[in-house]
Amino acid sequence: MPSIAPANRHFVHRSAATLPDEFWSAARRDPAHFNIILPIALDYRKSGDRLPGETPTWILFYNSSGLEFVSSLTSTKMGTTYPLFIASATLDPLSCYAPSQLTARVEHIAQVLLSVVPNAVKRIYSIFAPAAISHAFCPVWSRLTNVRTCTEPYYAAKLSVCTLSTLSKRSPTLNPGVELRFAAPADLDQVARLCYSFAAESAPFTLTHDQARREAAILIEKHQVWVHTVEKQVASIAAYTRNADGLATITKVYTSGNFRRKGCAERLQTNQGPSSLFGHGFNQIALFVGVANPARFVYGKVGFQGLDDRATSGFEYWTEIGFDRSVVELGHW
Image (cartoon, rainbow, N blue to C red; front, side, top):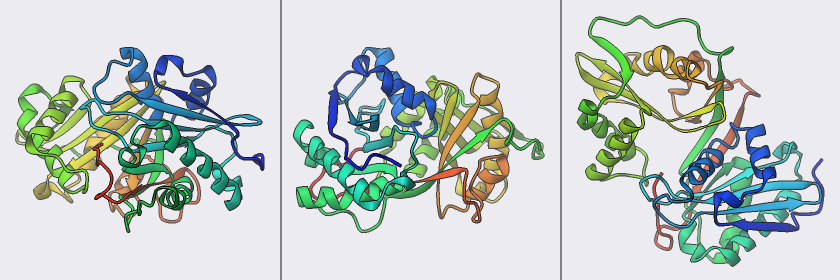
């Protein structure tokens, strides 16, 4: 059981170079749980913190046993701001915390954020964290700031992992005219169109056509997006953009409307996605999938765990909850 006493120490880091060993140890012990915070921190460290956007902020919260929670406020490679991310750094599952214990933790986290983050009320436009943390944090934050939460979560998802042992061994049939490969520069216009459409269905995090083109160009340049083409037309894309220490995270899967329900996403995942990543030094593939997203059954067939409606293990619930958009400055991710 976690210590009853709430986290009583915290340390603020504005540079990834100053993050202590216990942060890296906790993140690498459970890279799937840290699949957002860890790769972003590594990107900052590799670049010497020279990434576009605001100065990053990581806050580490400790209890009497050691590091307990990590929060981060960072920027994307396009310079837009990420939500507030919070991860648990202990071996204790969140289910071990009594509601009063978790409330005490997030109360402390919220007070520290308000004291050390410039313009925190505007900057923290949403929180994305394990569902228990998000749901505990939001009423505390609203009480302290008088900023209402949005009525519906922006995203309610399961965090699932595929390993080489769970990866489906079957390969869906490839029809004539179908090609599965990394996107090439010549695909920029078509990939940008699907990036734009993906964002259009992910309100409030929409993109302009120019922003979608820039995102597509970054994905192609970094070899982080696969395409499923049919007669040279890009029907489906899959991107993996957060990768660290043997773990890759699939961050975008989208199929054009006129190619849906034709097995494109499953072919792309089974023949190219995870199977390709396992051949390039990764031993786990993480994926967030919406709890009501029918594609979760496709991912389940590919080998991602815990996505069956009857599953009781093999996944974590994560939730993104937004704050009043008339008050905050909305970022994008």
